[in-house]
Length: 193
Image 1 (tube, rainbow, N blue to C red):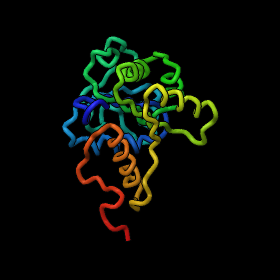
Image 2: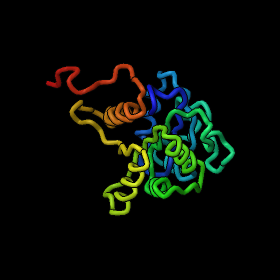
Image 3: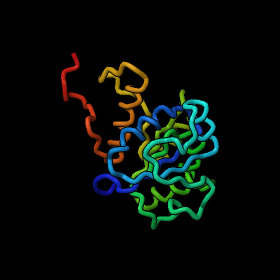
């Protein structure tokens, strides 16, 4: 991100597993004062329903949703006022499209806009294990300016539940976007014993 936190953030949801991380991230940034818009792929809707039992409209913090196939929506243009974008969770198919510069849907196009405008793009990739193509696509996206940040919990903070572990990931993702989070725990802030 150019300077400071974005005033408007775009959140894209794809069909990878890991919707727990998405909900944690949205809870963490809800009090930030940042306007949040969203795009959800059809596969993202299905996985969100399977894993969390909800529709995207029920997610917290998102003020406006765009259809994944609406290329006339503001995120498709470099003149839009998004300071940053996160794809959470980011499927390997979405990563491949972004790394290749394809604009098959609005998520891909918006990511391409972030890269061409030199704005922050965070890809919270979800897959395991990674094959060679996944790794090459991550490196290509990184070289184009994206931040590759898989949602991996920080265990040194001793999370006791899955929700607490997801919150450590949400804090890290917010850091990558320059978003200050109240009560964010960091290494060395307090004794761990």
